[in-house]
Image 1 (cartoon, rainbow, N blue to C red):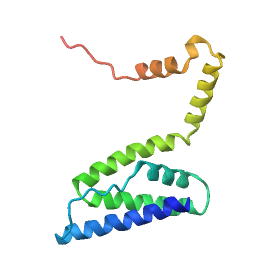
Image 2 (tube, rainbow, N blue to C red):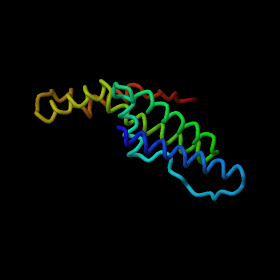
Image 3 (cartoon, rainbow, N blue to C red):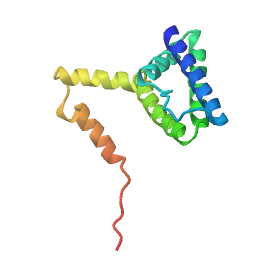
Image 4 (spheres, rainbow, N blue to C red):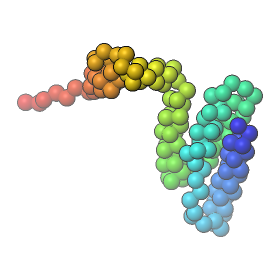
Length: 137
């Protein structure tokens, strides 16, 4: 957990330094990946684990998002992509994920009715919630 926090702290320093250099016109346009997938996952895991480092980890993540957003259009795109990935990582800690995993295990064990198979349930729910298109005359 400390490793993930230190990695993010170092990346934030590099991102901030690169942003200052670009503002001064002396920096290159190199791509500094502020949101490495593995580091993002480690940070989300640290945030969602109760303890003294949760708030620090969240603070580092928020600072990374701010630095990315402040860096311009490419940083905004990077932040949007990181937010999407973060949602995927948060899902792994949710009760919905635990329930889906339990359902999947029951499916593998052959303990479900055909109508209760996970893929069928998910696809039926998605189909029910798709916007209905109206045929115009």
